[in-house]
Amino acid sequence: MIAIALSCKPEIIIADEPTTALDVTIQAQILDLLKTLQSEINAGIILITHDLGVVAEMADRVAVMYAGEIVEIANVNDLFNNPKHPYTRSLLNSIPQLDTETEKLHVIQGMVPSLTKLERTGCRFSQRVPWIKESEHEKNPTLHEVGENHFVRCTCWKNFHFEK
Image 1 (cartoon, rainbow, N blue to C red):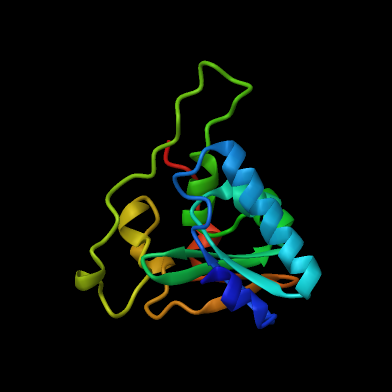
Image 2 (tube, rainbow, N blue to C red):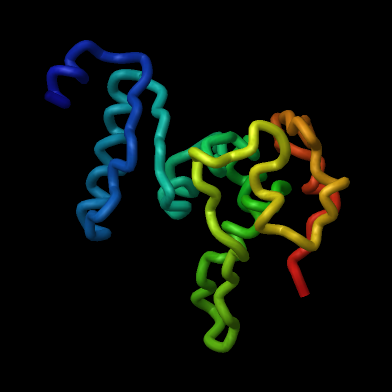
């Protein structure tokens, strides 16, 4: 089925979690195959994944989603080196650091909201950063350009700090 789809030489390949539950050897082969296909048929790739290592290796631009909503869009290097949204910063801060033994893993406080019980307005991440005042979240968060090709939803990022 994949061969049939690729025989049409699509302009865009959508790869939804292509490496989930694969060992690192097979994962590397799949990523190499995607890169080869991209080059051979001159296609763009939309890669949907929760694996930030795959994002770092494969992506040029990244859109980070939380609770079904894009919260940050940036070039991959900018996102990893200068994340803005509290969720993105927390997510990156929760990646284990291999060069330290004693540092505790960062845990994002709270629970992921139920998509069926989400409020129609307000910052979807606000309950997970209770130390940021409600007044510092937008009632109807929109994407704001905070740098060249770098967009963040909600103004709460301006007041974010990790809880002490």
